[in-house]
Amino acid sequence: MARLNTTVLVLQATDVGFRLNQVQADPAVRKAGREALEDTSRALSSIVRFGSEIRDAWYRSQPSGGAATAAA
Image (cartoon, rainbow, N blue to C red; front, side):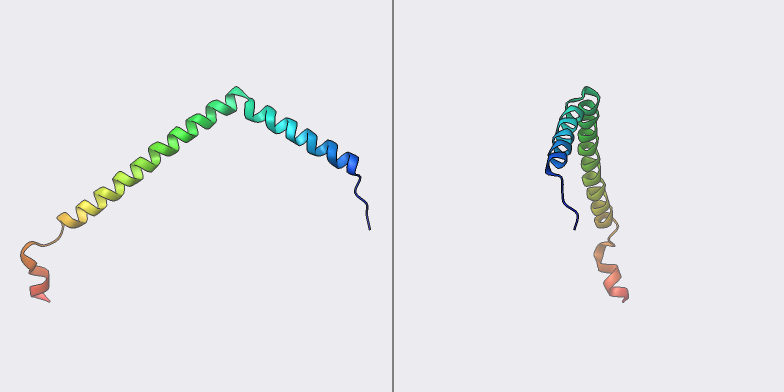
């Protein structure tokens, strides 16, 4: 069975942590993340408005006076 070299494993994990910190602190990454969050928020608001418009259009399209039930 292969043995893990714990020193190499610790060094690799430390390197990954250091690089992740560098990436998340990068100004371009932070700006893109902020913009993506804003875009997502606007998209969700649009989806909610879309759903409301669908519901309202559904209610507006109902026949008045119960004509659909009388014909059936």
